[in-house]
Image (cartoon, rainbow, N blue to C red; front, side, top):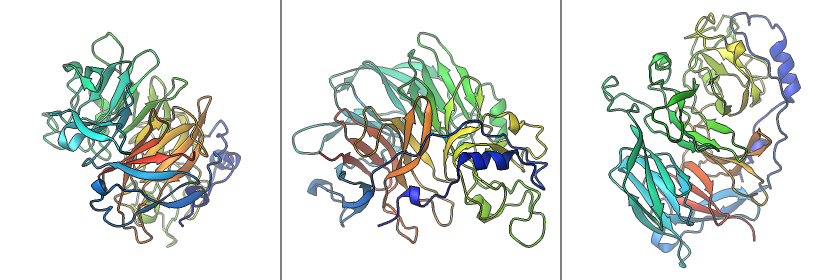
Length: 455
């Protein structure tokens, strides 16, 4: 059985990382970093993982479930395929005990309704939408983020009323200035404690700095206040904050797909040939940099993209260093901000938490109640890398949460990738349903899984 993630990810006490960040190491004059200021939460004591065979009803056993599939989950938990929608993405439980699943590739929102046969009935709630993605309820009002707008519907007894628009004109591939070239068109939603809506707007490209200067900033999170028209920019430098959720204490959090192909940002020899490797693209460095942020957003916060990159190195820029993903400093992007004139990375608050580079976190949700053997906290669908060798593994990750602080990453569902990097599944999102189970979407296996806790 593969080792749980907490046995695979080296780390050191935060005090050591802070000390190293504060010391003037040779060759670091062009890459100033901010010093972490607070200790991280202890890592959650998730139960040991066990390998379980996925239960698949005969009506749902098309490939890849035409053969036995197993996953690793905390001891006592079981897993069952309960639906087979094509290309499912984000999910939201309804006020009446159903589950909605967005399917942007098909313009649909699918409704899963519980019944007595052991897996829900699947039907269409809304169709004909433009890449619907994020969904959130405010009482009996359902908000849906399409690629170019945010709409609302009244919801009752598994049905919706007429659509009305809350915000339009969001950028997507059909925007005139983009001419079809928009890498991150899907939008996500979160609802604040005062009924404010938050909308993620992804970057145009991998490192398109001009996104920061537009009237409607891309690579941002917008805020829509209840009863008001228009929006304000709540946070910026958020490359692709597909994961967006409000914690039980009212704090807004995002899980971000960070940039690819960062060049080496230190005037040091990284590859061992004796030469300065500054601003070179080195595969071994790119594989582990930069962190995928898991950040608490406050009004005006800047996550630095594409000028500053959160750095996991305990020993900055040294090949083979241990990595730490809690309270991490930012380092200048050598390609776009080598002299620091675009953005002073030392003034950015340390990143609260993160995932290894190229993890591709997508859905983010907080638990409704404590999960047996796991705890209370954040669930993140980790899609896995597309451009790393070896590929980062897909999984469902858990981060404990208490008093505004996020603990470190723990794996609670894995086994979708073999030792050669071949995959049969890729989780997108995980949410806790009204029944206490955890529902996981997988857009590679075209499935929704139900993780059931021990009795």
